[in-house]
Length: 54
Image 1 (tube, rainbow, N blue to C red):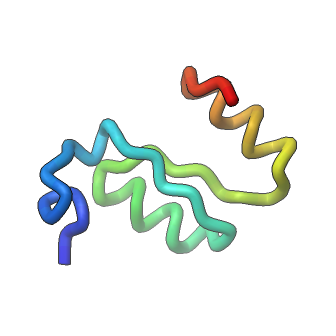
Image 2 (tube, rainbow, N blue to C red):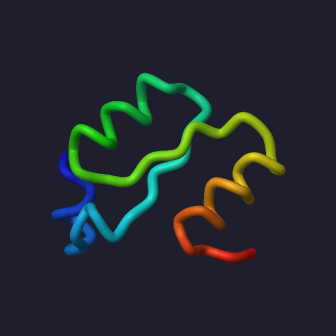
């Protein structure tokens, strides 16, 4: 099932986060922005780089 169609959102407006690079690559191939989770500090930096400040 294509989650972006199910949720009725454009995949380019979504960020997929997973610790497995294979899953991140699949999401990117589907049009999502992807981040590989390695640790909280890097996730915050990656999200900030995408314009999301937490």
